[in-house]
Image (cartoon, rainbow, N blue to C red; front, side, top):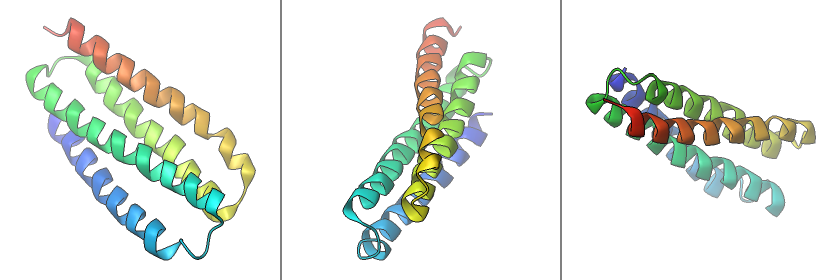
Length: 124
């Protein structure tokens, strides 16, 4: 499972660089400033949680039986999809209803970090 989360983190970090470059170079002239800021927020949180996935993978090298740490990784991945991808879609399409999904991703992020802390505290 450790290898899975390190790989997922690396793939997501790669995507963050690609999406960030696309936003900086490809969208700067095409999006309004407020929508570009929404897009950049998606990239920023995506990157934080790509690193979080790598951290989960590294922690699982030390605590391979920790179910809370494993669940924290899946929640971070879910948060990336729900939070960051919804912000990408919102900024690119202008469909404001997509913003209703974003808080679910935020809850997944918060839950993931809380479970990571709990898993680190209780791991044997």
